[in-house]
Image 1: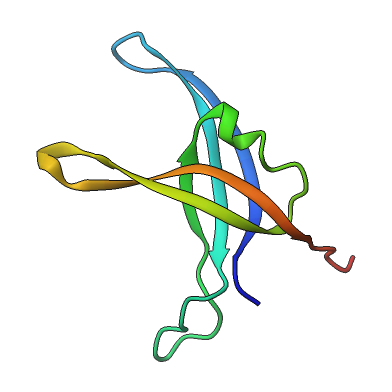
Image 2 (image 1 turned 60 degrees about the vertical axis):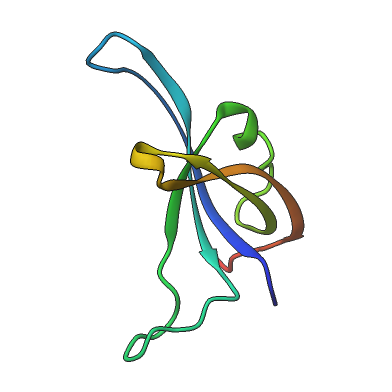
Length: 96
């Protein structure tokens, strides 16, 4: 199975030290196509920040999603990965 298993979406809303209001969400996911690292079992979860608008893409969690990643220019011209959207491919039901 390819895609990304989205495990958790958590909104945040706080005031930065300079007084700016910071809003968005943290999206925790597993890349299902990544190779396992030598000596490890499974795949570690990754977390990326997303805008509130992008977070609305995740209506069923957990679920397998096609994620749309983009790059933007960061400090010193280094690329920064951003999450631009997600589309549900397959819902996932966890056994209780």
